[in-house]
Length: 539
Picture 1 (cartoon, rainbow, N blue to C red):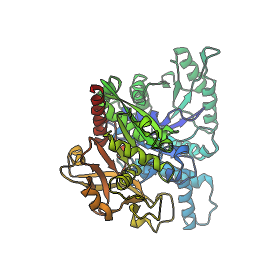
Picture 2 (picture 1 turned 90 degrees about the vertical axis):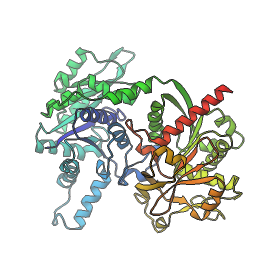
Picture 3 (picture 1 turned 120 degrees about the vertical axis):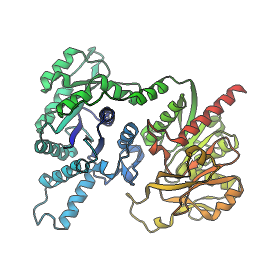
Picture 4 (picture 1 turned 135 degrees about the vertical axis):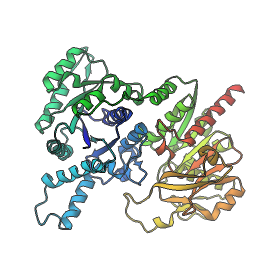
């Protein structure tokens, strides 16, 4: 039987339930278990696809085209296993399913209520991955904090589920905070006690407490927490602040979290965790032999989580190159022709990030012109690629008002235009070109050499594409379409012939970069930026 682990949070949000879930999953995977993680989010949106990046961070996209919470990115980066639509469930999806069933007559005229109908649908989603037969253990992270009104149906569903399958088949890990009061000079356990008491009021006794803390928790505090929260002392786990999220699996290994979990689920320890590759990555990450400065030009830079997968891909590729990547976020709205040299001139490489809408677009175009003309390594993603096409059209091909029809429907040179199948779509959520699509790479190009093969698949999230009516003009002038979708003829990758590194992709390579497999486009971009830094130093 599949075993289930639920991860809840108390006291405050942003304690790191996703990182704890991913770290535990990594340890169990390293012992030989087949593990997956799912995220239940209590907001009423159907998915994060329509949420503002300033509010929710990036929208992560899976292979099967689901727009999901950014925590699924952590799951994939740690486990190196793809997630799917089934790995992210929102309250909106739960209610939509129940309402659709009611409209279809599935409840035979009964009054539809939170209990049992909503809680039953939540339990159906809990079981879905477990019933597939693909996993030994399913970890379910519950978004929000215990006590939130919107989280109550999930808590009740977990209570019912745990009762139905038995305590040996489902456990609850509660992540909580042990604050340090500087004035008193001591750690305080009362918030944790209150959080557990609230969970008990809802009928759930946590099996393990993971205590987030700035300072080490001594034996006396562990004993006090265990006594007042009704758990064994070995089930009080310290989660001290770490210099990088990638330290957390090893910290949890030291705390024997995986051993405690397996004992409570009546599972064997199997082998000792095989974490050699992980430790090698951490060694490279923490002991770089060089350092570079990369500019991340975007329009949501006030919230770092808006570009979470990109910054993590920099970490993976930096470690691969034994190089510390210092990312400097630059708001595209603040870039002008007068200040672009001051903002970008000292950087070793520049990435122009994805986005939507007209705001900040001219700043991105100015930045791309500068790095193209000054031979600074450039990497464009999604809208970043489209801006590179627009800039080249304006400043190389002489198309003065070259633009995307997203920004200017009346341009004489619509070098970026809406995809034909998108023109009839009016609904917003989940209607873009989403998920993994194939791409054929041209032999002899940078892209082909980097991937080392002619056919790849990459994940997408866009409505607009390169207008192939202009393709011959671009290629004749030196901008090569090095990657093409074989089914739609969509230009997936562009690159410049006579430039140290000028590559841009319509897809999102950052979504497939993991600790175990850093993305080749990021690896080469960091490598090219490193070469640029060395060249500047030698001058």
